[in-house]
Length: 165
Image (cartoon, rainbow, N blue to C red; front, side):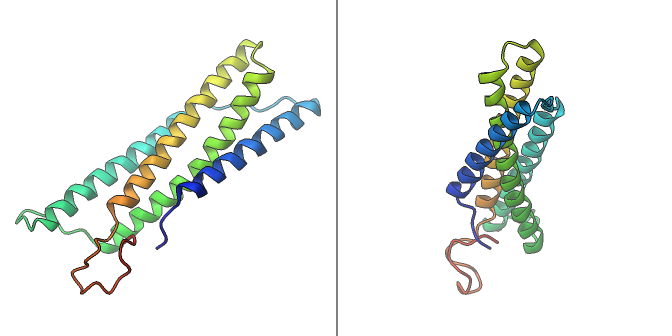
């Protein structure tokens, strides 16, 4: 499984910022009311980040106990770890796009519509969504790092060194 690159996530974020900014500006110039940022957007992203961090911490402690060959260690199923990595990668990719969309829209609000009180609140919600989206990206990358195979696999090192489960 290929490892996510921070450059790829940053490029997705930047592209989403640019598209969101251009879309909001175009939508407004056409005379339409721009959509609002839902209050639950940062909450949902933060919950996803918490789930990813909790999964990573749980897997890390179980893998550490397994490596130390503790008698009370619960084994980690490779398929479950692989699914966790896929969940982390998918969450990081989608949240990079979502954070970019909210970032571009929030930036447009700050520069164009900050004089409207309701839009000020929308800019704050967008900023919180960007922060929560970045937390999801960090949590996804952390989960991916936790599930990396060691350089010397117990099976004789037949897998690629440093690859994810």
